[in-house]
Image (cartoon, rainbow, N blue to C red; front, side, top):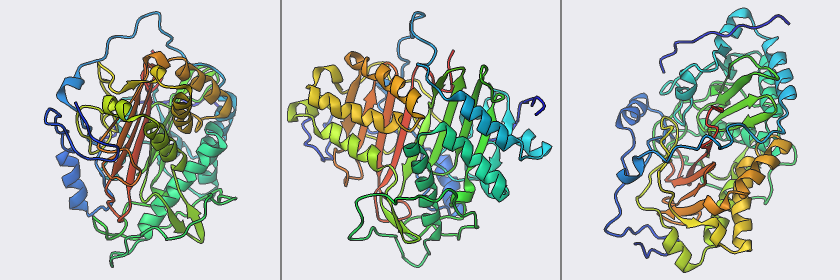
Length: 425
């Protein structure tokens, strides 16, 4: 096909608390409240499940981390299946009209890359590119093939399940159905996940435990490209909606998925006669890692401050805390370190397998500078539980919150790489 020219879009867009405890020592500083303007907008639109994206932290952490030395690696670990992703991207672009191509292609350094993703539904935060619900079946299938190429089998199934969770929320009525988790559920996800998801208009609902929102559902996900997909040049695939946002950047044989947001409410649900548990690997491995610490290690690992959401979530790209908090992973036993590695794998393994293995090896090699910590609680059923992994490269946050549209736990997670957020310098 002929060369595609991108353009610049101008869219507006000393703690002694026991595990599971929510107590705070007097010296701990309360977190910053969620962004009031966005929340007011959410409530004004009557959008349910509109958990906030404001970061929470003590003010002492707001200074920038020391500059990365010039000798540090500023490219990826290699192993990316860039050719397959480019082929899928070009196949998708070939299904589009010129007007649609113009809408989906951006300059690589367009500023809207950093503002066009969120856990707020549209139109609270405008997304970039094309809405999947506006595409034909052929176009939507081709768009999802891009993500299927970029992600591992596990990672793509999680993407499908997150979209299903939004369909589930959209289906909840405003008559008091809170979508409580069934008392008995299977122990595994469906053996065959559907390749596509419904694109019907979801029903509306109000905030709180009264159902879904008017802008929830699998049709409210978007795809865009920053830079022309190429085997040599740098380009980003941005895909996302309410509870998922992927920023996957390629540069030759290297790939980074920083930042990536994955979230869900509720943790488990039945939909169309199938059982789903999105993020199950992430929550079980995270809780397993933090609960592997001894009582003394847990005391030392408690992070100063309380958190109502992600610290470096949507709308807050940094700076990273200057001083990592928690316990040093290299000081833990081999068994404990293996649990930390399992936690890392739950995020890194969302990428295509070969690149994921190389990136994971890099992160494990940095355990002498990597810390794991917690705040609020360390149990899965505590809606205050917050766990963080902070290394010279890897950054993971896992945040439990009270349910917004159901009476179940509402979870947000973020993965970042300090050396490759939105690409490499």
